[in-house]
Image (cartoon, rainbow, N blue to C red; front, side, top):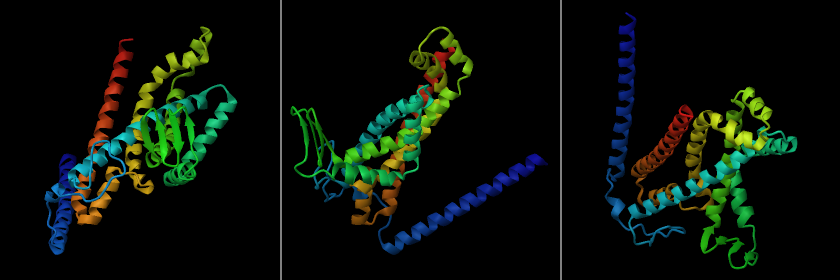
Length: 299
């Protein structure tokens, strides 16, 4: 009887789900007919007719919407990957300081985590953009032997140019996420039994060496899932790039919607773009986790 009840419940939930989905599709079809736009992606191959401030590949306003979206996806990938690396580096350092024996570093890192986590990300992005870079005067710059230049337009380093929009997003995302990563690192380290700490200390191994070589490898299985979650959050938070004028895929989608009215199609493109990006991050972290577990199994 219980088995029949479960089957009936599953069938009922399926009927409700597909019924609601059908209603949404019907409403969407009716609204598209009313607007006279229809549903198609042929507009992707028409000229975009707008410029992009940043493009890693050649781009002009006469290029297609499809190419503009691809450039935006590359820009998103650029800032996300850069932020992941910087956030992981900062978060690891702060997490180590939070769990270390130095009380001053522990206090500073705790204050850092508290302030960053309690401040909205959008506000931090605005700070880095309007105060950190645009706050510099036009004639104010720092130059070191033509290798490193910083001004309100951004940073030039060894021939590479990073705009103020990109840097504001990079610093904002990295610092915001690093506070959460630090807590993930701290939680993973604290999950290792105190006996492991006492064991390496009794052997005369230094705190730094014992933490890196003994404690951290054992903490990684507990750290990786939390890191994956924070990496996915960082990727989604990157859509706030529109607030500082960075040409990521979300900002370009918004421009295209204003020009063409193709909100549904643009939403679908954005959905699949971030789905692909999140799948890449998730699969990469799963591979790393399997390698760690495999190495520990045979060690």
